[in-house]
Image (cartoon, rainbow, N blue to C red; front, side, top):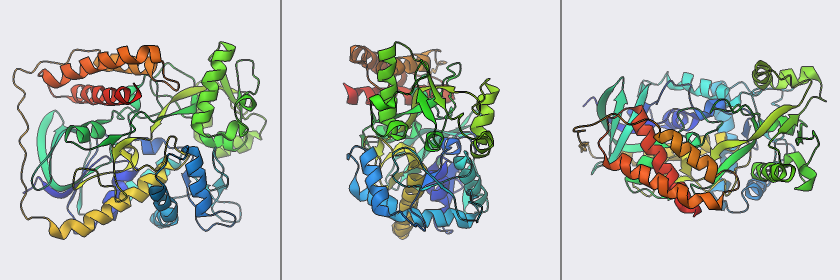
Length: 483
């Protein structure tokens, strides 16, 4: 049957692509891409990928310790160990595929430093590491004859069957279904649940919401990382990320008086972990009565700045700021999700043969706060874990596929405008960096009401409806944990 596969992978970021690459060539794979292949959070990752690879003064024990400290020791030590131990293999793997990491004048791989790391262990391609890795993975996947890629295809619904899973999809305005023995969710984060985010526009938590709807355990969804240095241009929902690596190269954080202030809050100063810096900025904003903050690296050599951070330099210059000459405005912004669909060490959820990896998953690696540049590494390590487990089980699969039936939309009406905007506003007001306890309960009750409307009324199935329903479910789950 043309619509049956061994594995359906939802999501085409680093985790989804790498999962497909690591499955056996005998495995028939369908790769669903919500929009175009290059549009995902992985492509936006700037700083790099952390790894202990051919070290001189580093060790996996140090990487593990830094990860645990950043996560407030709420991490899962077993998955952290898997992460740091496997890092060298994933680095070698993507190097073999052709990823072009920056090198020193003598040809050695360059390692930079970021907040929370005790050693220089961040491998990078200038300030666009995610895009460099993603481009390489896309080229590789496109050579695989066993993988069918469907771009501009939205996952609308997911059901568990007796032999695996059935997926309802929306492509070019037409609904269709596909069926598989295994399902791998690599659908990314939830950034669009906030008014301002560094995430791409497709980050609406669809995979998490659909996993929840079929009974998968969702854990720690309230553990949301707010990046302390997003470019403060709140005219658009997608805020430019100003990489952790800028502070790693010596940039100072300044308050509204253009004075350094991190010494008031943490001895690690600008290189404290992200949650500490974000909390410090919000606390300093309350102390000074101003949300004007700046990042200043202008004391460094201008040519070094342009060479090391070409993308950031060009983007902020287009906004009227020359980071080689002046401080640039920044403020915390939603960036990353530490919680998600709970998985074991093999990336399997509590629903048998349903796997999740990347930002939508909860491996426990990050604890309460992700260490900088561990996200791309986690995506690679745990998508390989999923692929290896699926490979081992393929021989036990039946030859048949049970097909779930998705309900017809009778008397469906267009979705009224405003639901997504309201959800974003409620979350921004009640649950940003330091939650506002006075607004949490009202926000929860309203989002719960919106979710009930979206799940009980009959609306036309389009991208607006699917994303609104996902955001309502995500908002409901976050605030339920917080209150």
